[in-house]
Image (cartoon, rainbow, N blue to C red):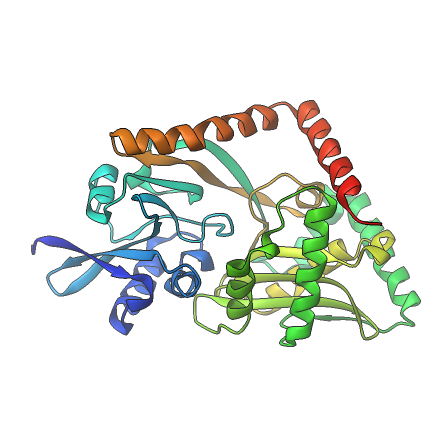
Length: 363
């Protein structure tokens, strides 16, 4: 067997052969085909995050492993697209298992932080500080089977949502329509405006206030690749969009990312209607799984058929710089964990955030 060597390249420098090998390794891994784990997502992030890198393992003249990451000026590392990426980790052939700290040494990193590490990443076993559920909708047996399951598991939710859909259709004079893959950039701009307003209204960090995220999403909207394509889904009442979602899809997984709706239509729950139509269209397109993403939400509980697990934490090499990075990150993470573990305290925190957001909003 040939010796394995590691080469570090800019994420935008991956060649066609390396991209093909990456895709083949993912396909053979048996993991869900999450588009965030595909080379196209890493290359898209590299276009807006110049410090993006990939460690490539070679065995002879064959690429056998990939580890995408971002590297800070002092060697601090983070998962590619940290803060917006919903699935993270290394892509390695079976049996290739470099030690986590040796991996960091190859990459010149003092640490590597992640917040959505996918399950089944043995290289980083033991580095996770917390585990989180990521609810999913399984439509592998078709949408009719999924809706039949909802009638048993969540009959009131389904009945109410379908009734609101009919009422919304009547208000729109029966011209309610759904577009699974909308290409109009104006619809994407509308979604981002809604989402920004929602972030501000609820006191959350406005992701779309960051230029690199806006540019990344616009670029992904136009991306068409076997394992990673942007999908903008829009629910229209007549010609007016009332709810929209932007996510990424592979052949088998739709990774749900940015949903939002027009608050003027809130009484019709257009976001819930949108998700049902997304599930229906995804099933018709041969997609078997919708990953709703990490995070608690009532609508996810109502829609889900199961859950995946993702992890948050960091791998750290011993040293003064790593200790400094740990001190800057870990106390805040533990404070968030403390609040999450106490639902009543978390609810009071959300109320306080909403109140502050209302006070800050100009009238």
